[in-house]
Amino acid sequence: MPDAPPDKSRRAAPAGSPRAPRTRIQERNRQAILGAALEVFSAQGFRGATLDRIAAEAGLSKPNLLYYFPSKAAIHEELLSGLMDTWLQPLRALDPNGDPRAEILTYVRRKLEMSRTMPRESRLFANEVLQGAPNFGPRLHSGLKPLVDEKAAVIAGWAAEGRIAEVDPHHLIFSIWATTQHYADFEAQIATLLPGADPMEGAGRHLERLFCRLLAP
Image (cartoon, rainbow, N blue to C red):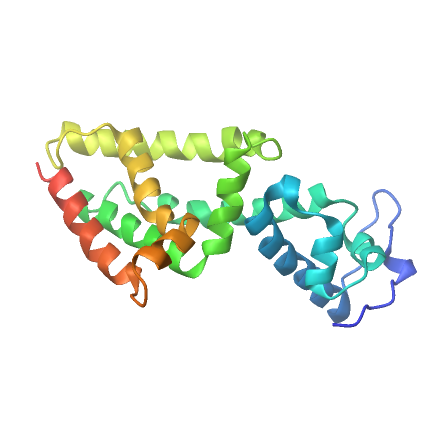
């Protein structure tokens, strides 16, 4: 993709003034940068990624990339911010008024489907957490923790009512993450061990049986 010449009139807006809307070329280039960064960050992690590599992956020059994002950290932050909203949506959808086992199994299926369709996003998040969440720690406290605590309380309530087996709700959620995101984060290993197979098909059946048995009151 050829570089778009920087539009100097859009580079900076006076404080307090509305930002001018992006042109189609600007939006296309931003999305190209974010897509390239997702590829590089998910493979190399934040520390291993470089602006030169991201620019090359996006088909842009480094100066052109820096017109849209001032730093590697700014690109990483935007990717993770968008990912957090998407990543938490299945957990937000857990309905306190629904059938407990159906709600939990739906959550398992949705998380497994995300591993199928969004493996790079899963690895991006995993890489950040493995590094100690240096760029995203505050969002874990402000976004992830309150939601997990809220849904853990829902699960604990279901168990207390005898509607599901007694389980540690936080560790149940962690177990769902571990068993579903494994298929994205360790995709190369899965492909080696199950060559030519669609692992998600068997994974769905296995995990449904596993959690059905675990949750049976």
